Length: 429
Image 1 (cartoon, rainbow, N blue to C red):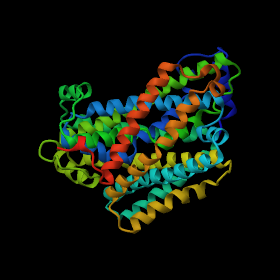
Image 2 (tube, one colour):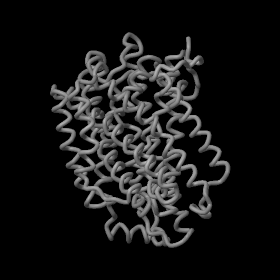
Image 3 (cartoon, one colour):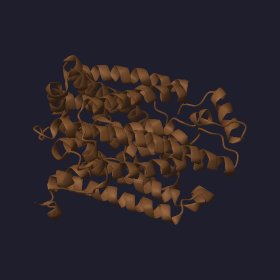
Image 4 (spheres, one colour):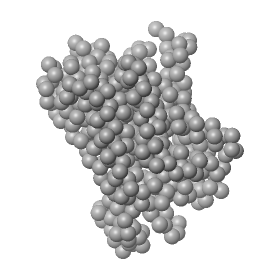
């Protein structure tokens, strides 16, 4: 993994010793949650949020809010694990679980990394293809080149990569800020949608399952623990508590921004499509429909945000895949090989002529299957005193994490059951 410069390390040490304070001091610890937050604004979110807004207006905004709160909890726990133990989730799994379990976990996690990259890669390619009227395969090639170029900066340390990812997150946020300014949002209806739990019909439940069930991303849980594991050289428990405090603040802020972006997606779709175009379900359709409804500027910003989302999340997905392989196997893989491993399936899918939106849906199903692995492992480790020492989570937080895990995993089961055509009586009607 990349490291920090000596200057940044000295700055962090001065903050932990109490010699330096203020908001600039906090910025020295910022970065890991910003990178992890990209997982919550990836192209897989676009189709689900568009369906939610187009089909049900502002009604399902409460689901986005709930999903974001669960995400905050698990990303905070992942960061906590890295800060306290100095190891990431994959390394701890390798050290504490039986060898057959480790191999199974690694295999499932590798498949999840490929599925993640498929969705993210396709998102950037779709955006480029639509914006510049290119064949999808050309969009894929451009996305691959740009992604690899950004990954080169990983060798220069944490900061350059964090600044690049932060800039792309800023592009996504600014695009959707502009979208909700352009779109005639019913702010009263949006506020009610956030605080009023309601599922009008079975199809709404299916979309809610898609929003929550695919919110906590497997690769983001692995990655966050790795990004925090050696960031600060803490010397005692007091300094570790201070780092945890900074980390928790960053998680809340970064994922709050990600949550607001997702809410903005739903609100834009509700404003533009709900009355008259409620059947809009695909990214391509949304783009072509936006142009006559809100103008070329709104449609262009929609694609710009999608491209930024696809490229940034593809970079983060590759970083996570590299960490997963190194953590489980204790084996370093050159970045170009790691990039190739996750890139080939995406090119194969496009070359085979598979519908891009269908491929996105399939990737979410694969992620749903893989999700229990890191979630359960994370809860086990942060609940063990022999691993966490005095920083073991208290029973109340353990219960909250358990409830969140049951909710997410239960909804993932519903998503998988529906996909494979299993009978779910409570979804009938």
